[in-house]
Image 1: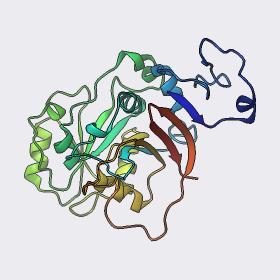
Image 2: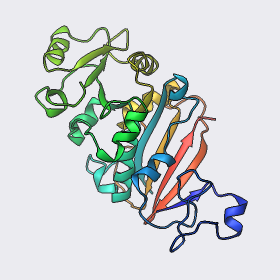
Image 3: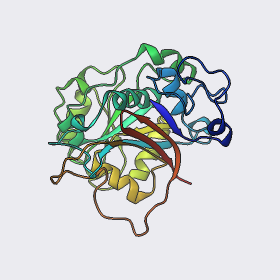
Length: 280
């Protein structure tokens, strides 16, 4: 794994000071390996590379980032799941992003297809989460209009922190009661049947969740893009081709004007590219 961007003129022009072994160094005292690094990064280094911005959660404002993977030909999944187009490094970053978040927001269909389980506490991030005032693991927030979910699953019955259900005010009362009986906390984030993404972000922030992460799926991410609430896109470009008719990372109606994001960092590992893009 090596950092491709940002690279300063100084680090590109000469070998950096503090080099250890085969091209390993830490850039600028940030804890993030520099451009000559080609090794497996520690979780501490990944956490430094993907730290939430100070103008977001640190200032008491929500910051919503997405984490998705896509193949060279634009497929967000293969045979309904993202795992076949992922990699070990991708899963390490996946775990790191979860460990930095207060809450992971996910669509109901993704919960069904991917077999979602509760987020687990990880010893590697325990001190970091404690210092940030976070609990042992992020909550999972499921976005659903129908609440047609299997509430006997571990996601609802045995999480470290209660699973949240984001739904609309017109959701069926019996399904809300079933969710609450299973131990989930139901949060109303829409006036009708569905969820308003902007209202969902505000509702989660009102519960103290300002470090927000969404893992899709494509329909939910498309709604977030269309509503303008997405602050950051973490995209893994998988060096694979799948053809077929798999979904893109974001679906639904297109936006009136394409939204331009700025590249914040780019990491490479075994042909996989890990880009981090932010709203300007």
